[in-house]
Length: 461
Image (cartoon, rainbow, N blue to C red):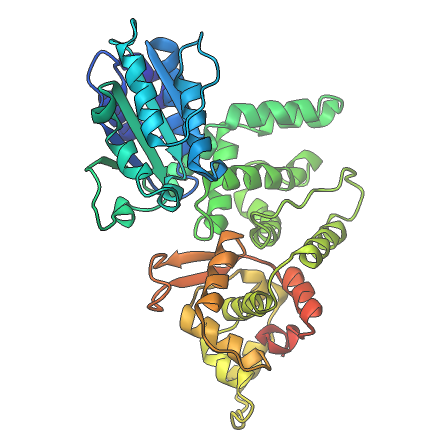
C-alpha cells in the first residue's frame, strides 16, 4: 500500500529508497511475501526504528500479525520461540510453551489449518540477528526457511550491523534479499537534525516563558536559517568523529543553549555567524571529548559549569571498571590520538639521542591553548602504533594474545575508542581508530594505575 510508504517518508527523511523497497516487498499482505529480508548497516542508521514503524503500520492497516524482538534479550532458543508465538498467536490463545524449533514450526502449521489465517500475513523482525549464530545450529536455517516449512505468507526480517557473508556456515544458508542502510552523509545528517527545528523551538519558548525579554528575542532570533547555521557549525566539529544520528541529536540540543546565550544577552547579533563560531568553538570541542558520556548539566546557571563538568568526568573515570591492561590500552590510545607520530621516539624511547633546538621548534612549542593537540581533538592512529605505545608505557612484559586484542574491541564497544576506517581488519593491522575521551578523563585513569599522562604529552613538554 502506498499509504504506508508515504506516511513513513516524512518520519524518516533520507530513507525514501529503503522505505520504497520495503513497501514493494512486504507493503501488501495480499501479495506473497519474500521468505527473508536482511537489513544491515552501522548503528544509528535507523534500522530498528524504521522496521518497527513499518511493522506497526502494517499491523494497523492490514490483516497482518507482527513480532519484533531483540536477540540480545533471548539468551536461550526457548525464550525466543515463546516470545514469537505470544506475538503471533490469535487473540483468544493462551500463552504457548515450546521446547524446540520443531514444536514452533508445528504450532505455526496448525494455525495455517485454522480458519481465517489463509489470507493473513505474518512478519517477524529480529534485531541484533548476529546473536542467532550463538544459538542452536538449526535456529538460523529454519528461520530463513520458515515460510516454506509452515506454508504461511510469512517473512522474517533480520537486522544486524554485519554483512550477511558473516553468517555463512559449513552447511550453507538459504538466499535472502539484502538491503543495506548506508551511513548518512553530512548533508543528510544536517537535514535529519534540522527536521527537529519546530520541536526544538517550542522547547526553547517553553524554557523562557517566564522571561519576557528573552522570550521575545528567542521568537525573533531562532529561525530555521539560524538553526541550520548552528547545525552546520556543529557538524563541522562532530561529523568526522561521530555518525550516530541519535547521539548527534542529543549533543546538538545540549550545545544549542551555549550557542544561543550571547544572542539572548544582546551581546551578539543572530546573523553574526563568525563571532558566534568563535563563541561556540571551545565548548563544541569540549563536548566532542565527552560524546556518549551522560554528564549532566548543573541546574543553576550561576554555578561554574566547567568545574562541575570536571567533577562528573572524574567521578565517571574513577567508577569505570576496566581490566588492568585495558586501562593502559586506553591511555596509549589517548597518547596516540594527541601526539604526532614523529614524536613517538622522543617520548617513549629512553636513549633517543639529543634533539637540536631550532627556532622553528621553539616557536612551535609556544602554542596557545587553542592550538594545543588536546584542544583540537583526537587524530587517527593504527593498531600497530597503539600496541607500540602500550608496550613502551607498560613496565611489565606482556605477550600479544587474543585476550589483549579483545580488550581493544571492548573499548570500542564502550565507545571509548571509535573506528575511523578498516573496522573489519583489526587482525591485519590496517584498521585506524581514534580516542573519544578527554584529557581530564584520561588523567583520572592514569591516577588509578599510577601513570603520569602529562609527562608523555607534547602539549606539556
